[in-house]
Length: 206
Image (cartoon, rainbow, N blue to C red):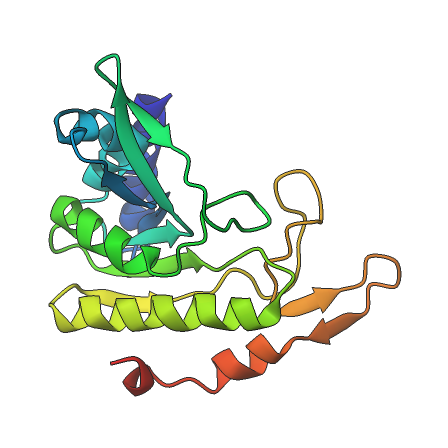
């Protein structure tokens, strides 16, 4: 399936460029902040390569690559194989580790694979019913992104996930939206995080 997806991407990219030379073509990849636990360094590559780095390699030569980051994943070792280590800290409504600085770690890891291909943050956010937590989970990633840019990583844009609460992973319970949605009336109510994000300027996160 991985080979088929990559073949489709390369073929589609070639056809688009042939028909519309002005288009800037790329694709988005789920890239979490994967970190090896002590002693698991020897198997770390066998975890991250098929998970995301093989798709990042296929993005070389694209005009951009999208990075979608939400959490940290700790990688341990058991019976000589990589395993995910579940932490006992706070979790988001999706059950992912609460790790607001994950974006910076994901960018620093994946840039070593994509090289000079420009990066766009195509998804970053948190599933929570606490909007103050949402603001913090946006503030810290923006700051870590600015630090990465300062270190020379070519990041061209940031897209927050998501504007409105949506149907996510099988139900409506994981609320990612900057705007709340009443599923009975469909009324949409902007959260304070929407106003906060709209007021931000990159210089505030340097």
